[in-house]
Length: 203
Image (cartoon, rainbow, N blue to C red; front, side):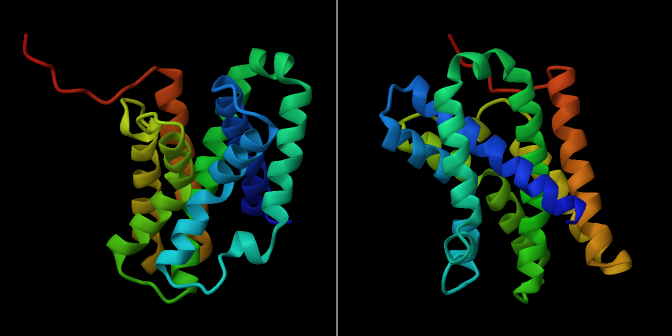
């Protein structure tokens, strides 16, 4: 198994766990928890595949990631009281997931003959952050990526790195560079508690 594929699996587990934890916090039932976990893990990829006109989104044609999400959901439900104590571990794995899905989103765009830089970057960011946006919208919250956290910005930086490296060093180098840049940006922001500035309100 390639390194990036392993990171994708870890990211799927982390995204699904994050979705399940949000659902539990919102006091949803087991079905709702499962849906939130699945949407968080594969929602971004489904949106990407629809945009580039893939007849059946990859995560539906190959249900491996949905199955992983459901298994993760069961584990989160069973060990919820222990898992919530390790918030930093979940956040670290989530950062890995963001990096992996950003890189894979850009790669999938190229595989499907989408070469326009802005479109590739957009699809990469959608893949990395789309599931969380859908999840938060479903529960009536302002999506996490639109708040002050350096989250979507880390994905954007990784996607830009992909398009910068790809013309000169090829797809594989671009994938790993994108992964590294996204992960580094997210971890640095977490380590030093970096946030984007907000507009100061009057009065």
